[in-house]
Length: 458
Image 1 (cartoon, helix red, strand yellow):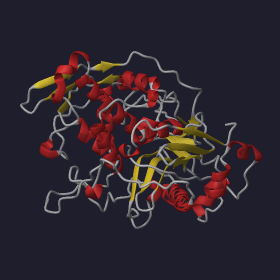
Image 2 (image 1 turned 120 degrees about the vertical axis):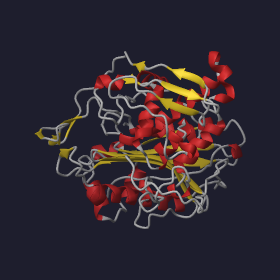
Image 3 (image 1 turned 120 degrees about the horizontal axis):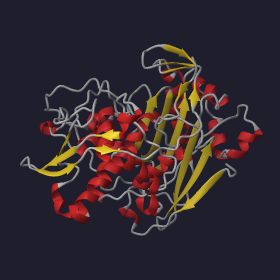
Image 4 (image 1 turned 180 degrees about the horizontal axis):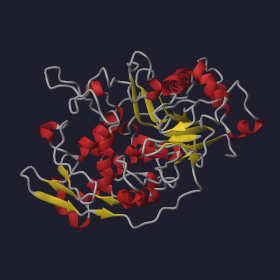
């Protein structure tokens, strides 16, 4: 990148109190360590300064050799004028849309956004307008098995009354990042429409090609028939099985590592091929989140079309804690409040008072990613922070032996601490009264004696 950072000023089109929260935030980046002139020319000097204060071994280890760790960071400050109009200032470090990282569970976020948009549009446009109140995030849904290896779904054990719904799938995808909900959202959307819609919204880096089911490329092109039923059990909408005939434009080979474990559990000398895997740039992931958190201050092209109620639902479960949730009823020892909040994941497993993090994380193959909007209603600060890194010192991909606990998680925690602390002291012309407008968090029912969920595929 030729410029150290980019500033975008968005004008408010309605009263500030109608938005989800406000105000500025932080930075991060490298050094104090050996950083080349070339690196300095493309990175935010503010992030470089902040990162130079890192004082933990794992953080210093990554910052001394960021290329090996495939590190990328975006920190976005939010400032407002006296009318509440926000300005977003983006600070970047080593951000490169051509530097591949495996998004892993990050793809659950755009699929959830698209699924909510599809339900909204089915209910409110064209020939499906008569569905009206009958088709929404709480409508019963069923998935057929329409192609070899597909799996049908009629019941959902963790849902009230074991009734599966798109809303419940989104909860599971966000709260602890379960995998099957992503597969079902992928099946509802279809492989072709998923990519077409995201590309049309301006997310040009997106390439979503696979479910988390070990399918072949051909199997991933096929998606299940999906049916919706009203409270009386009457079918109100049926979606036929899908097949994507579109071709994908894959880049030059993406080969990572020195060796890998193949499908036969054999060690193969040679890099792992990520060329045809899911792919989304860090910038596009943050843009998607920002378009939902601040829709009225995001480019119209980037936005998702669903109701304000649906938007509040999405924001609630991006930020709600497992300990607050009744359905699914997760075991809070295994799935603690900071379980999927990498920037705040310390040994206490608790979140700071007044802090909510609206985010999605991904971890697989040694890649760790977190895209977050952080809000502190007590200290009146908010900001976006996104980062990804690769921690696989033995160079063997797909062996489930990565440096997540020793390096990855400690680095992200230190990065989060540095930015959060900087935000607490950063001077602003106007410090807004932040509030979580419209979001009503649940409270765990202590009288509920159902067993908790202690294990999940995530």
